[in-house]
Amino acid sequence: MKLGLINSAWVQANQPTEYGLRKTKELGFDSVDIFVDPLDIDIRERLLIKRECDRLQLPIVSIACVAVGLIDFNPSVRRFHIDRVQEYLDLAYEYEARNVLLVLGEYIWNQEVIPPAEQWKFAVETCQQLGDYAADLDLQIALELEPFHLSLLNNVENMVRFLDDCGHPAVQANIDISHLVLANVAPEELRRLKGRAIHVHISDCDGKKHGDLPPGRGVVPFEPYLREIKDLNIDGAISIELEYSPEPEKITEWVTEAYQATDRLMRGAGLR
Image (cartoon, rainbow, N blue to C red; front, side, top):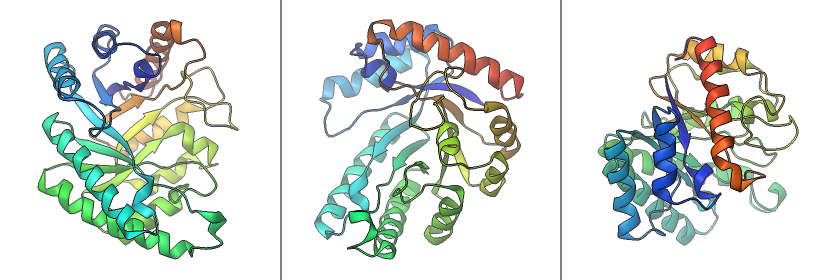
């Protein structure tokens, strides 16, 4: 598998786009995932990202999108977010990426006002519609498992149930290793995602709170998860997710540490 980096590591440390992409290539990454909202960037930034990645021969694999409004109870809000995710898919097509990494939302009002089944139904319907749009562009959607109590997709059981209900070949799963640990998901449960997972995120955490630390800084036992991922035969990338470095001025050292640790882990598991 390719070893990638989500470029939010550089963005959140206030580093210029060119610097982040150039350092990503220099450090040895095979690919990059882009965290950018097509509704927020101007044409200069939009073109700069693709041109710089082409110049560096750094392929873009995924574009990350958080669209919690896809499960909103207001139809107008859902329509807006469908349109917005379609803009992400258009950008992924333009960037010659493989997928849009999609984060769905959480049950609102503690599941006490809107029936949970209703929000689940909203998510299935919007993802089916987006799956059609993605398939028409020869793209896929990778749904992220979030470890929070009220997240729609917060364990493998719910991920599998959602993929079954959605029933769309363009809508598949993302695997985030630290999220699995936080959600108390055993490595063996990943076997249920055979043929249904298309992208992987890797980072460390303290086992209690979402952290996105370089591997080795927390308590995540990576080896058994990576062994299971290897058996899934995913034709894609494992992308490091680093956010909100405690020392933004040392972000290059932070990313370098993460690259070296992940490279060792992947090689040890026969993934690279």
